[in-house]
Image (cartoon, rainbow, N blue to C red; front, side):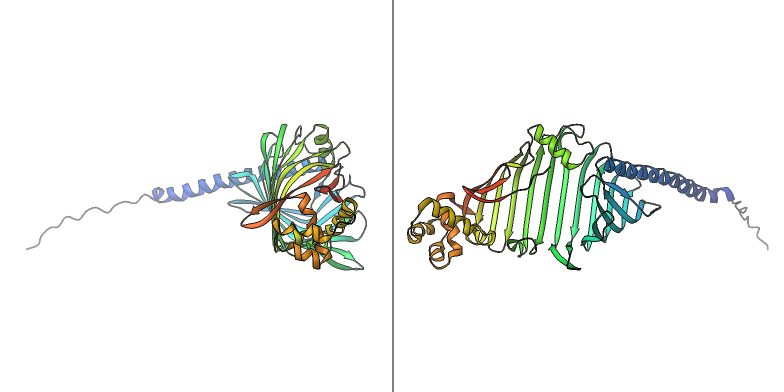
Length: 385
């Protein structure tokens, strides 16, 4: 006996339903591509705007060749044979680097991140190279637009600076890490901006500049610049003149330097005279001052100062009060003329405790560019314009 079985009719597939996801992907890809090219155009415009702003400040950036890429998520602008000219300086100077790469995310073209490949060379216009810098990594970031910049950061790993000496490169300064950050802390770019600046460095040394800088040092400085009418593009010499005319100042909120047994912290305020020289005071607290004064060569200045003040005063009499301030100085003064500088601390400073160490607090004064450690003249700062 045969049994009839009903079979369901075959389902008819609709090819257009299969194509819908593919069509959607293609539409999204086309839309994203359009957005990327729009963002790339905005990023290129932003970079051009920054170059125009820099040119108004006397810094002309050019590229031997420029390439744009990074699709689909980033915008990358590579500048090959990058140069920066300073035609307003006397003499005019030129910086030259192998290449630089400026990167922006497609969804945020107002944040620019730059990476730079060394070496970076410095030369007078039309003359051979006089200085050179190199590094393992150099990166900078800029937030905002050319018309309204908000903050700038520079980070460099293992920088090394050298100069031409007797036909060969001589290392001038090195460090393991350097950071510089700047932002508008109050006001606006166009109306009385207060510029906050933070500098940090580690393992920095510069034996070719001064014996006191031979050993590696770590440090940080945080300061705010008050007195600018605006932050329009202009040479820094013109900006310093503007700040001096407005009675502006540099408020140093915190400064810290550590080098071996020497530790110094300080804070204070500096202004500019009409001639562009520093004027003001930084209150220092120093541990290891006996070592610092020897490195800076202050010992001879102190000896001359004490001779003018006390004539025949014996070192034994001066040394009798030194252990109250820095234990061990009494014997050092008797046995080492270089340690005589610490004797002046009895009249200049006050004992303090700094991070668990015996220290001395004393003023570092700037008077029309002349630098004084208490009453002792120790040098002169060059004018800023």
